[in-house]
Image (cartoon, rainbow, N blue to C red; front, side, top):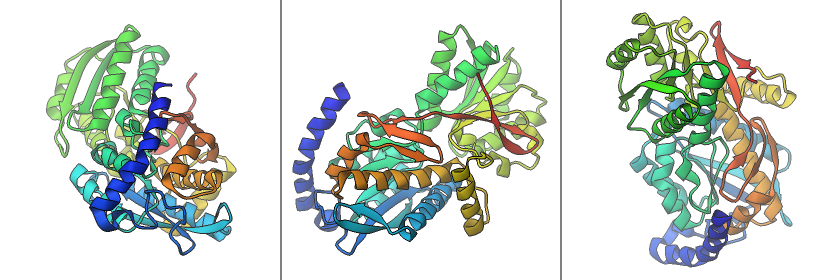
Length: 393
């Protein structure tokens, strides 16, 4: 309730902030921008800005989100567009590369604002999102991160999240390790220079201890590390029963491969950043039995999932991952907000966010006043070089 009050008060302040931005930034808030105009882009379109890494170590995530969003937009436009009161709008996506870097993300965001975006789909990664979150709040634009899981990404009243949070991932995997598997001696390897990895690791550690477990090793590395032998050798020297690695897929590939080379046979569990790891290892046997969280699985028999998978494969010659599904669902959330509001100003769209329900590929989702989604998560196990659904009681 405290956040709800904050959100209502902040919405009242947005008009003042938007006026200030107009005075200070020239073209930043033009007639199709976020400040308070209710005429869409003026040409029958609604411009969505996308932000995510299209290059660099996390490029797989950004490319997937962009491609998933493009399929959703094509579907919506082919079906006639989006009704906003008495207007019918076609959606347009302008996507910029933020390289999963804070400074680059700020520059890319400003580029999008200069182009007059009316809602922001992004960022894809947590660190980049934290770098721009206060600016998007000051600009008053609706921001929905499809996959950024850091808790503070939704601290401002304009910000919402489609995926589950870092704390939820950490707590869920701790319960899986300690309660479901009965492993009370746990090792952690994580990136202490990354907000996502640190956030999940900290929540996991707290929950393991609360459940009566013990963290027998907590080994850190930094971004762009490629040699994990020191950390893994330290873990090998403990009595750990399982290793938790809340890291991105490239790191997960290095860690599991080098663990195998060191003769470590402990099971690995991870967070949603593992999605895409199979394509990054030479021998998928190093991943056998690894379990991580995901909101989406391409082999799901659901008809909507299979229709999306078919379109994605036809257009991009690839199997979609959770990030593609997140991008797809986020576009449909924006569509639902426009239709609920009947208008296109950011203030109206933000207000509508807590009044919509969207049945997406990643589950049926509603949003609370804190900007967080109400939705579930799936456990994924890697078996025989494939991602498979895992039932966990």
